[in-house]
Image (cartoon, one colour):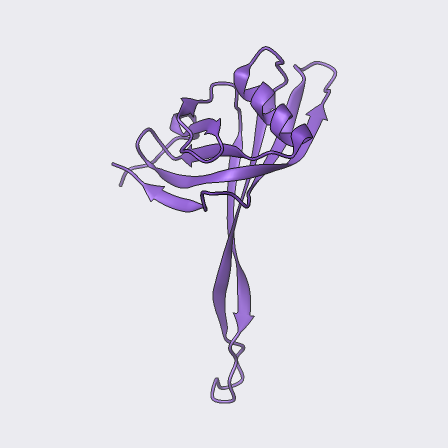
Length: 140
């Protein structure tokens, strides 16, 4: 059994329309939320049970970054949020690993101002309408 540590996960950003290739150093905790919508396929022959099938997938990514206006990634995220433009992102479990690749829209950009901490931003990414559709990639 092989385990993966969160500190070995990799995140990349880039220009929408192409696969993200710039490693993100200014990122802390990342949560990749993968869910599916559901369709009810219950029949009378299901012995009184509700039957469900998964339909459309949703891949929201929540991350925490340091508020650093000299950092290229922070600037790209802030610009994408305020200009309503997509940003290419790739979230892998390790270098060359597996994860979600897509052009994303920034749907949350919350500044945290804890008294004894550095300013941070909570950011939420959702796949967006683009020339590149979301894809689960699996590397080596």
